[in-house]
Length: 199
Image (tube, rainbow, N blue to C red; front, top):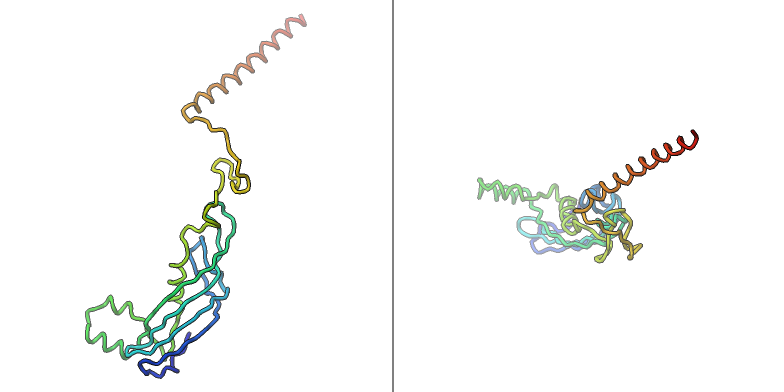
């Protein structure tokens, strides 16, 4: 929670804050990348008193962790994001609702000051999630993993497999079956020859 009492509800009054907070749980894109819970988040805030409430403008800096979607290696990413939110005085909110009693959509968007305090976590969460990549990569030219054996291609740039035309795959399987059958027949024939020699 952040306190706005120092502004004194004087329109035009300004306050600047620098804070280091601990990241809340689930600050990121689930199972992809995010700021670890408890990690430091550096905030620079500008609080401006206006007629309706307090306009908060700020930046957040943190370090996110996840894994590369191509090679699955752990990675870290610096996050910097900006945000702005209006925190409305309760009595100003009442006047707005009387003026437009049917505007439910606007009511839902209003964020209230409570006893002169505001909670920045929902705003911070939205800003950080939007700043994070949905498909994080350790570097832009990451080659990823081999689709056949799973080896990391950056570790072995010359890695390859002999390509087999899928149109011949069924015939190749048939040829292997015939070869195996011939071996079995040859084995039986050799056994028959041995028996004759013994007689």
